[in-house]
Image (cartoon, rainbow, N blue to C red; front, side, top):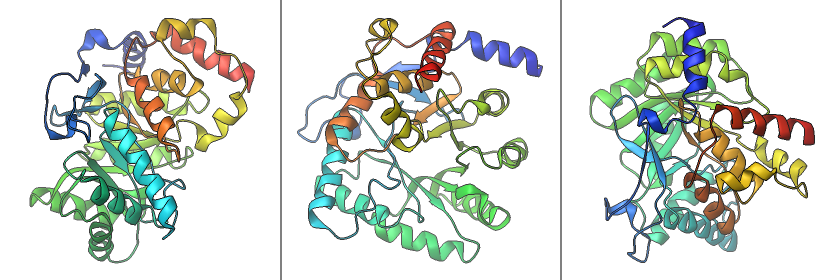
Length: 316
């Protein structure tokens, strides 16, 4: 498929339901598909991990800044409450990194407190130019996890050493998925070069209705190569929502059953057929539940996605 044809296809496929790339989570399902009280969760949209066909809920949870609370017992419990609300609303993927301060330890604390180790899709990163195995051992200790679902080379640091290490762990059955990350639009060409030459399972990039550069080439490449896409900074680290605070939602938001700007932005993202899972971060349990509700109800088609981007562009 040519670049022009591919981009045209991706735009026309943004409604995505006809592609069968998203399904609904219903029924009893596996253990993680139950609330902590043992009841069924609300139905949420899931997206396919192309390399295996496994499906995961279309909204995840980030931990950058928000979970870096040190040893403060009250703040740790607050983070556990965020995780509890996230799981209860149908979430599964939680993402962290060694560069996020105490976030890894706080996630481990929350998983222990909630008894939720069978509910999480554990996602972390390797971020070192030194001994990658030593850092991974520390990460496992902080999470209290022996086998991660996904590990990623963070911002391509030590890529020549760390990516082969992760592939080796995957080959040995000690890791399920391998990926790479970038943020703030940095090193996009380098990321794409790795995507073109390695059989990655995941790539993580910055994407939102304002930061759209990845739409032109990176997202089509991910789709063509069968690489799942995690979206970081969906709200520009919260600044996008701050700029939109007090602004009325566009009338068409009601058609999507979007009750907030956060939900409208997340629907914009998960409607893209190449996007697998945005990972918004929050300190508030109610916001974690609100974000998950974006993974239900109608999603925008390609025309409405452009309207969302245009409205937000004008307002900010």
